[in-house]
Length: 316
Length: 298
Image (cartoon, one colour):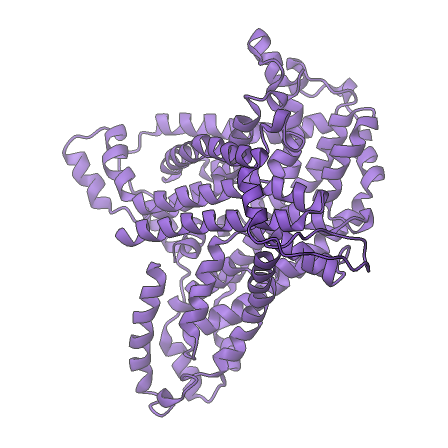
């Protein structure tokens, strides 16, 4: 990634500068400040304990018929090779969950990019009440999903406010228990909830769009909307890439919202997500090997997305 | 909050100077868009408060406005009795503070080392930080559950809740970016005066890093306070559950028996929402785009 490259160059230049001060230490095998190793040790140890080791464990149990037994009991957990992976890929519920996430992203990603950019653009000025508006947009982002779900259930229930307002236009069955509406509702909820964070990202990116380009567009007599499309949108393209990738990764991790808003999987598994399915298989039904295989497949997909991110970011 | 004098944190001057990127303000369209948006963002919060105070759930259109004769605090009493609010709020607090302490302590140490020190393996660790940023914790929930709950027996303990969140690569990144901005001469001067690395960090770098620390604290606070999945997996006993988990379980299993289930749920929602919302209202000016941006953009 771009950062790694810049770190490399920065290290050599810093070293050169430093060599004027401490010429002898440059030669040390552990580096100029070996004490840095001590500073970094807690991070590395925790990384090993809660990331690397679990990853290895997940890899191994995904090849086993691994299930939870009563505490203390010794049980046989035989190797089954790729059986878990074959089963997962052929599992209709798992396929359904991937499809659901895809449906989620189709709605969530474009809506997130569009709305957060427009709102950040509107917020990017000196005006009265600016801090009120900012506060309003960050509020859902800082609030727990669990808290907000309570009022969404109230609003979108069978006899809720939304259906009262819609009258005969209300869907039947109601939104969250309707198999066509369950997943789009989750997408709307998450878009709304996370928008504040993406507005922040875009606000940062907007500071980097050169003022001259707006002035040039003014000279050409461009309207506000034209300036938005021809100056702002290209100017924040790297941020857009980031927003797309982050929103996609959010989609891969959905758990809380389908679990609480649509009571688990929703009608006929209409809102089962991969992470929810992993929880259901692994923790509720105790088939940890099977769930671990789901986890590994999702990891591969997520890393694939990250690779795309790397490609796209390096192209810029 | 002390005002940083010597080193201007990136946020303040840029916010002030560059906000007017577009010279000619078309303020009417702007205000219209922002107002429509703000209503959609704030209304659910308003409605949650109103709904939590209703004696009987009023889902009709007039229920949007408070009616004095339909107002009560029994929903709060109901939720308080059902999930022992002080106890679960205490659990949330312990969980959150534990995570915050670890995040700040390990984050500063690692961020400082990665920014200003040279040692073998530095680039490797830096790449690892970047890798961890893209792999979400949720995808490792099964092995973490196997290890922490089954193998180490840390289910229903604060330690078990905190451990997976003890290091936060985003925070490491924010701190690294901040320390990189500090002029090298500061550190060199400290070294010439004979200060050790630890002393330089404690006496020179950390006092300057206060704005970055506050930012990392604010950002990290909402993580564990709002976290649902992991504490939900780890805690089975109700007296160990953080508020978010206790409320979710109440919604799914118990609420039906209450006289006004929606009202009780929303009363819980209000209680859960208050701490982070209040914190952000207080520190809103400090919670700026640039810091997050630099954290993520690298």
